[in-house]
Length: 107
Image 1 (cartoon, rainbow, N blue to C red):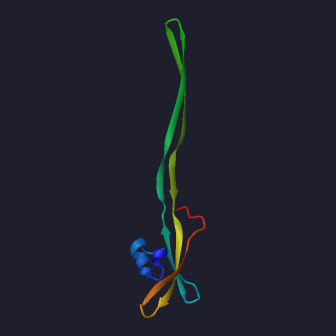
Image 2 (image 1 turned 90 degrees about the vertical axis):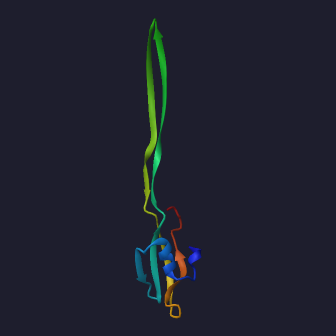
Image 3 (image 1 turned 180 degrees about the horizontal axis):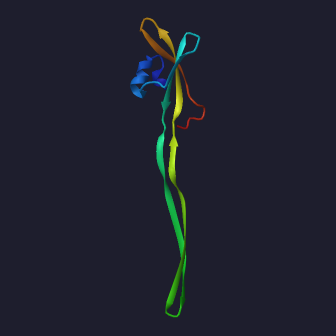
């Protein structure tokens, strides 16, 4: 995010795609919001087993226990990153002067 400071917001759009929200802040600044990160991944399932054999004469019985843990899918929508900009008349562009992101960045 630091790489976009004092740059045209269109540089962010080139790298991240179009913003999901754009709104005026009321203090001559404009906010552009983008999703960052997110996706899905599969958590592998782990299976463990144990058993015992019992023999009586020439016959053997086997009993087993199996335990499966984990498995499934984890999905995250990502984090909402906000770039605050100011209009630069000479550059005819919205220039990034601040950015905000969640305090606990887990995207």
